[in-house]
Length: 300
Image (cartoon, rainbow, N blue to C red; front, top):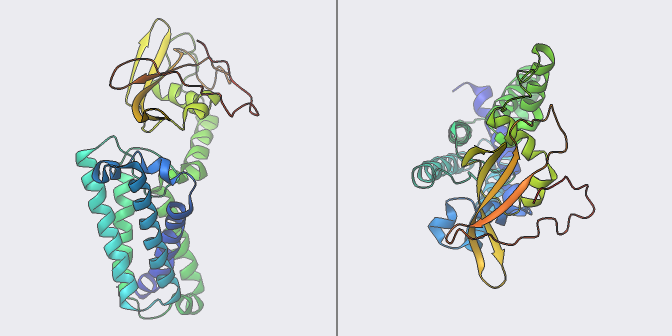
């Protein structure tokens, strides 16, 4: 293998595993995010799923420390490759048995398992294999060829950004805004008719109504339909009640069929929480604890 790749692979893999491991082990939302992964189905308990996700984070941090501190040895690279293989197998099982579940890869963002999740797991596997063949510490290689090392580090960072959905706000959203500025808004002139579903989701996700309901939501968009000028967006969720414990629910958001971020910054949003088993309305005070934030109008 090319020496610069194998010698710098421990640095790249170590930093990646350190970030994702710290997010899982110390993240405040780890338990919430674990509840939407396939670990809940495997372990049959949300608390155990959260503990399992934190244990994976601890393992990632341990491997990251070994990669960064003692590169050029076989064991850290092999451990990284094993983690990558485990991640790939876990994603394959989750995709096959619970395609609506979240990845839980970084414990920072929720979303369905897609190609980028598999790509990142594959990169960890390949990076571990490369690290296992390293002959010199990464700092030695960086000092010997600083220019090529910097170029490799930048290329690796760009690749990791491309396969990490939780970093989309760093590069993908700015690129989309730039495209609109350069080529115009594709929704221009369509304000009198229905906007694309993606535009409704984008508007919803920037609203306080979404922020208020996000502790309940556990999935990406599952279904949508239009009804009498409203667009209804359905998400799966879990609602904790002291008397009944966790109960699966459907969270329905209804927005103006023609509204988008280009036509309004304060959309009226109907929010309904429906019991998934009984189809009964669940009384939820979504605005509790949000008195310090500006509240968008919520139609009832």
